[in-house]
Image (tube, rainbow, N blue to C red; front, side, top):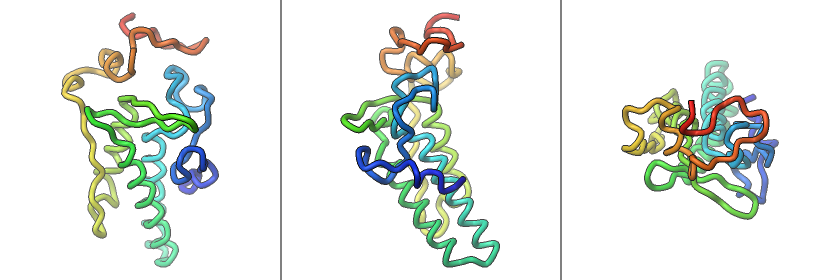
Length: 167
């Protein structure tokens, strides 16, 4: 599972990070533009690969652990490269990029930034910037800030969540 990202790499989106494709039902069915290369799940892959390296080290497989550590570092650095100003993250599509501020990106990048492996063996934690607008808000009330043009977001058919601003 830690190496699941390898089969998802795509030259069209940079070749390093996992590309989850264009189907919004694969990742977050209620955020239709959250497709292709996103920070959150790539951060999770970096974290899993770091954990796998730790397991390999525990088993005495130091060479394999070093390879897994290097792969995790490569993924983590590529995720860091997706960070944008004002607490936003880049979504990479084959022909374009766009900006989003989804809470899943903040959460998973923060988890690998503060979790096992970060700061160890010369690693610097990943930068996580939470926009001041989101301090003190729950995920539902902050949704309009998190999703560009949130008030006019078109949800895919069958999405069980209400439109932003509605309860």
